Image 1 (spheres, helix red, strand yellow):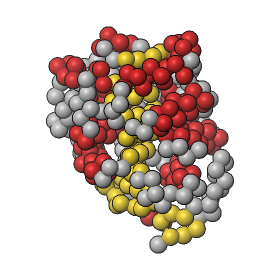
Image 2 (tube, one colour):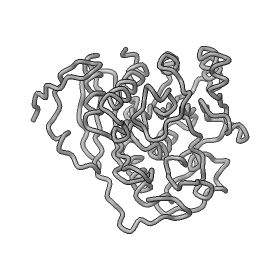
Image 3 (cartoon, helix red, strand yellow):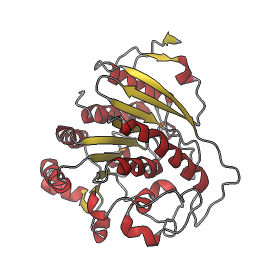
Image 4 (cartoon, one colour):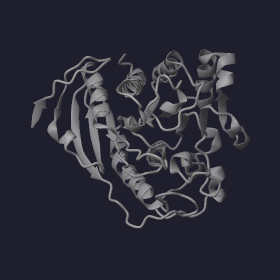
Length: 328
């Protein structure tokens, strides 16, 4: 069943037709979409648990998803719903090694691995829309299984490389890199819910933008100061030279952008990339023809103080996504 919604959006000024079930879905469902024309699979995995200690960080918001789908529809993409995936709540999911909700997050990531692996088997580019960046444990794990020579571009205002033993908050959105990097295998203790995870990336497979503390691990990275000094053109030239000719996974945390652009996120940091710098980065990644998957993470409408802040965050994310697929 399809109904005409008649919503108009601040930037895109669109009307969009979507199945009514998109508005009636349980917060624990995953909506899987497929762009038939360009062969882009979209996964929007909700994770309705409290992981920031202040507000529930739900991994998607219906209006945000509809905005994004609306923007893609204007480019002529057909959308097909590939069904829902339920994330079951884990009762009595107490902390372990200071890690909050380990069983719930671990199980959600494991289901995400099994589901979106089917997208890559069909040789499609995968777009993952989310909130909590801990979901990158799942998205990158499945992607590396498909492309053993995967190169990761991690765009984030934070390292997200805390281990369960070093994390000051216990929030898993600050720990995904620790679970993925082979060199940290001995630093990460057993955590319930994550027994299925095997570190899959070497430090040399990773390019980290905006944080330089990870250089001690051998991760190629640029701080924002270096971006200012070298300019984004030189940074991207060196990025692509470093990654060579291999499949690229872009994991994009919107808090890496200037907070005025993406205020509806949980952990914004002043002094991030400008809109144009972010667009240039995504444009250059698109031009390689090697962009195989994109995570667009930490869009959190509940953190927006006004509707204008939510709109700005969603519309900025839309622009970055469309740039990844040359749809601007």
